[in-house]
Image (cartoon, rainbow, N blue to C red; front, side, top):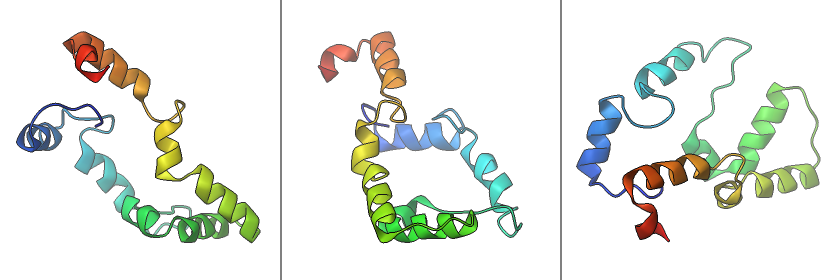
Amino acid sequence: MDGFKGSFDDFFNAFVGNVCGYYSPFIKHVLGYWNKRSDPNMLFITYEDMKRDLPAVIKKVAHFLDKNLSDTDISELADHLSFKNMKKNAAVNKEDVLETMRKMTGAEKEHS
């Protein structure tokens, strides 16, 4: 998470200890969906796929939803959904949660 001040070991221990993030326990959270990945009404995409080729993932999702998108639509969506733009989007970047955590820990002085 942006703003995390601990070591990688601290983060890793929190992650595997299921006390880190919004989807803890992470493995159990993902495994439930992974086990359904072959269901006809389930589309499983990964962060790595999106980082590697976001337009291809958009096309895959559109096909799954039986939607036709033009090349322009795909390009505009890829820009809007890029990690660079999502990081700036207050509706999805959890900056409000991070700010609350900074205030609770006194870290907002360091972040300013």
